[in-house]
Length: 178
Image 1 (spheres, rainbow, N blue to C red):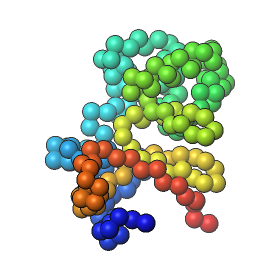
Image 2: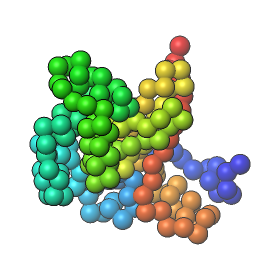
Image 3: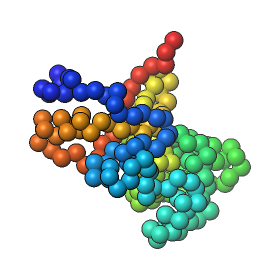
Image 4: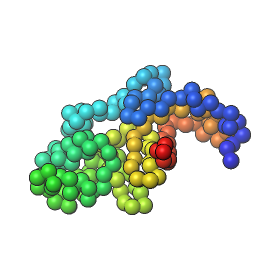
């Protein structure tokens, strides 16, 4: 049951675009005025920017680390460490299980990539900025979404809960239309 006052919220005034930049940066309340129309401000939008971020963080860009990043950005999906290992080796890249796991852990810990904990295990994605996900109930595939909730709805949530919303992500589940 929704808290009082939330049932009348008009979600149609928000925006939802798969993979596109939202009008309010990644669901951060404080950034609305500073970055209108720029959903991924200060977050890498291409592989070269990711490499630069790694260097800025003091991370070594080894051959193995580049291979993992290259694959994640090429696939633009959510993969298990095993998937990454198999895909890289099927492409003729010589990389071991341990190297894949160590690089994924280092990249995730540094905030360069995302890690989703699922019942079936961890999945890694190329984006590390706050964003939402839509999971297909039939296939299990996950789609990244930039969702912008209407300021009125966020204000209602804050009024009902007594919290100031600083950031948000949504996890949606559904099935494709038949």
